[in-house]
Image 1 (cartoon, rainbow, N blue to C red):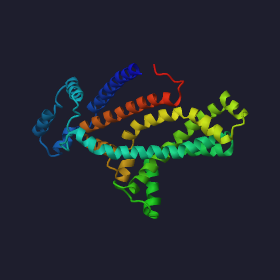
Image 2 (image 1 turned 90 degrees about the vertical axis):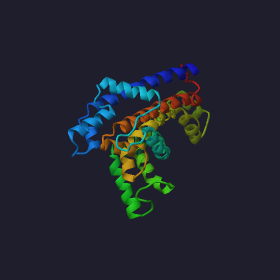
Image 3 (image 1 turned 90 degrees about the horizontal axis):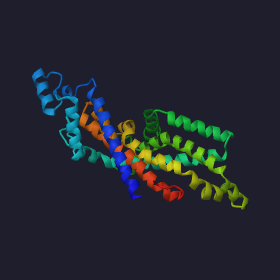
Image 4 (image 1 turned 180 degrees about the vertical axis):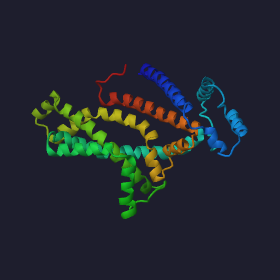
Length: 306
């Protein structure tokens, strides 16, 4: 187990190194100039050159990336160009809000997606199965802002059940979490359906039925525990994806997470924040997958970590 964890940590470090390099390259070749954003349109050429030198943006690419990598190794994500604040402090101040939304969204996904997938698998090939799979396809295809604005209009504007936006109470988190839950539930329902169908064909399920076990016990006691492993893996991926992929939802609902921070940084070409959020999100994905791999043997003892 320890050797496996060490090997995965080394692999994770190499992945994060690759992510940092690719992101840095893309930002380096970006046509937008962060110095112009800082200096303003009326700034003179001397002012622009001075700011570029102060930020080290006049150095060759390899020098800039080497400096960034050295600072990163020392736990320094850099300093925001425009907010004049350490990127680490900015991310840490926004991280609790994103983690709250992440947990709530995953719970919504599971509460919506798992029952739909189980029902679809038990009615395979029937009208209900086709209707549920069509619904799941529509949910994963729907744009985030459309679902968010629709829920806002119905439940906040028309019915007045929830606030239009903001952060701080349970009522504030319901609509953004439900938006992400609806959008992600389609994936879970399709994965559960496919996995359940495979498990229901297995010999041990036929044996359980032959022993006279009830339908609910066969489904929830034998089939579902063996079909749940792909869901564990998906949750691990979602941990990282939500940290970077909820930019639109956080912006629509005014949720002060790192997604909103990233969106503001992209608009203003604040490269240190963009790099910081990207790396934190990549760490989330890597960590989520590692946790999912470590949990899998606890669910299914047949799985061995090598």
